[in-house]
Image (tube, rainbow, N blue to C red; front, side, top):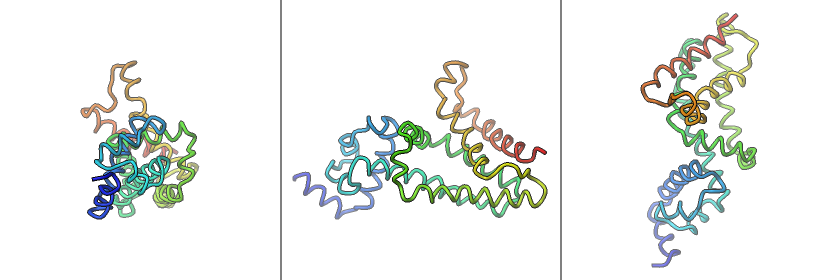
Length: 215
């Protein structure tokens, strides 16, 4: 059976499943090898598809990479939306969000590596997305709601804006993932050692709550 016939048969059988499989494998390939180093042939081989099929779904290597980035941001924002922080008191809501972010980022190293890779490329691919800016605006809106409630109750300082808080919440776990190996080599501590996870997760919440409640 030729590649084109095989591709047609797979598409008829389960096109959405095939697309999901390609994105999953591509996520690991781009995270491990970067945009330049990732090979579409390798992704096709690991998904038992063809290069032609990948281009059928995503148009190009750039299109596949952008779909991977969009998928990574969609997943984290969807999980974030399930936290239901609006039902919590402001301090607890802020802590919950910081601890969730630590959990997610340190258990999804591929996501952090993709963000690092895109920064190397000065966000040239991400800037082409029609979805990512809107997806991430929800994170800031969630924080804005929490902070407004906390400020109105006299719990939070009012001189730090939601984007600053988002930056602080994200930076702590990103440091743990991005600098894991150099930190371990220099100081002899693996920041992602499972035995340290709960300690660092709590510290993530402590730091952001202490910052926002500091007068």
